[in-house]
Structure formats: C-alpha cells, structure tokens
Amino acid sequence: MIINHPLLGPRDSQEFVYLGDAALIHRPDGMADGSLDKFIDYAYLRDNPAGEHRELWYHEQGDRSWLVVTRNTVTHEITAVELARDVARREGRSK
Amino acid sequence: MANPLKSLTPLGHDAPITETIGAVTITENTGTALASLAARLGYEVEVASIAQTAAIPLPGPGRIEFAETYAAIWLGPEQWMIEAPFATHEDITAILKPIFTETASITEQTDAWVRFDITAPDLPALFERLFNYDLRRAGVGAATRTVIDHLGCYVIRRADTEVSILGPRSSAHSLHHALTTAAKATF
Image (cartoon, rainbow over all chains, first blue to last red; front, side):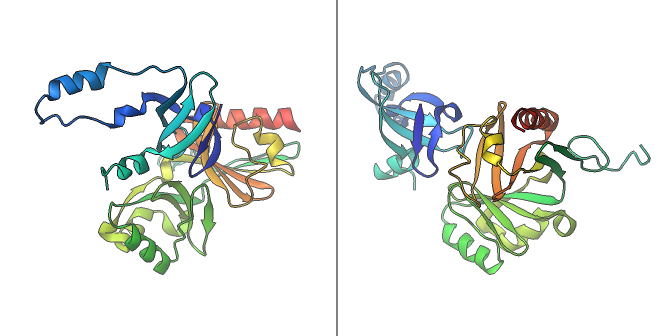
C-alpha cells in the first residue's frame, strides 16, 4: 500500500505505523463536567465501518509526522491524506 | 592500538575505510559535523531570516541544500539537520547556538550517525534492493529518511552517481553489511 504523504509524496506503508480512528485526536477535557463518561467513550468505543474510515498514521520511519488518512477499509483505496496538525488547527486547536 | 584515547571511526578502525565492490565504492566518511535544528513555536520567521544571514540554507521537504560552509537536510516541518566540515566545526552546537540564540533548539548529532558515501554508475539499481524510496524518481538534491534493513537511515543524493547514507552509529556494522551485500548482488 502506498500513502501519498502531503509533504513527501508517495511513500511505502512499511514506513508508517497505524494508530487507529482519527477521532482519537478529539481528546475530551478532563476537567469538564461529565468527563468520566466522555473518557470511557474516548478510550473504549470505536466505530468500525466497512467502507470509508478516517484514521491516524504515524510516519515513524520518515519525517515522524502524524497524518489523517481517509481510507476505504474494504478496498484499501486512499482518498485523502492530511497532516494531523493541519486538521487540528482547522478545528481551532493547537497553534 | 598505539594511543588508547584516540577516537575510533564508527566501524571501529583508526581511520575510515574505503572499499570497492565491482562498480560500487563505499567510503566511511568521518569528515562531517552534524547538528539538528528545530525552530521553536512562533519563531519560524526569525529562524528563516537568521539562517539566511548566516548563510545556512533551510531547504523544503525531502531536500538537501548546499552553501559554502553549511548544508542542511529537511527532517520534518521546521526541522533540519545541519552539516558542516568536522575540521572547523567539531563543536558545531557551540557555533550554532549563539547564531540562533533562543529562537531554535539545537542538538549535537555528530556522534549519533555513521555516514557512508556510495558512488556507482547506476545507483537506483543498487538501492532498489535496499529500500522502498524511489531513487530513480528522486533527482540530485533529494534527501529523506527511510528504512534499510530495519534501520532508520537518511538517504542523500549528492550527485547523479553519489549517495550518502546516514545511519545509526551503533548499528554501523549492520548497515555496512547490508550495503556490501547489496553491492555484491548488483554488480
């Protein structure tokens, strides 16, 4: 499988490490009310779709960037690759 | 060993070795001082202008750029590896830190790496046996990190027929073995 890195171009998936659902970047605020339930959802509950899935990949054997990859779990077709940093910034987090 | 305090090369010899296997020449290069440079958050513009004044190139993703004294390899967003001649810049961090002051984090890297310079007429034929990075598409000035025999290494294409590999110094022999095995298989 080839992942088209947004900065470095097409790279072999062997260089990457898979983390899981991209929803993991939405870490709940631990100090807010009801954070226990939110953390239980965050830590244990995942969607497991047969089809399009947004997931986190780490370019460990490359530039060590975190990527948000949109991949079809049935066909393995990759339709979008973004830097996780850019995704978080677009949602008003990070700097 | 004549002098027990004399430093050894990454392969453990008194002097760096050169070997020729068919059309491939592999040279252990100990003539380069290295330091990593990371722009601190919010100082990206300052780092770029300081580097320009100091004649330190800061290339874009997947590239190396050469200037008179310094060369730099892109490592990641706002991060570079700075190369300088070992003879004049042995203590490279002591030279770079006053230049960048508080705008960047600089870490000595010289003794973390072994550098092999490899020359061959058809480098892609050799390296397609060693890693998945497409050297045939990468022209002169390409520099990236990839995997050679489970070792994270930087691949730097200095010229059409010359590539440098920066690998972990503690695995210098394993990397050297991988390179010589591939060279024997290729030519």
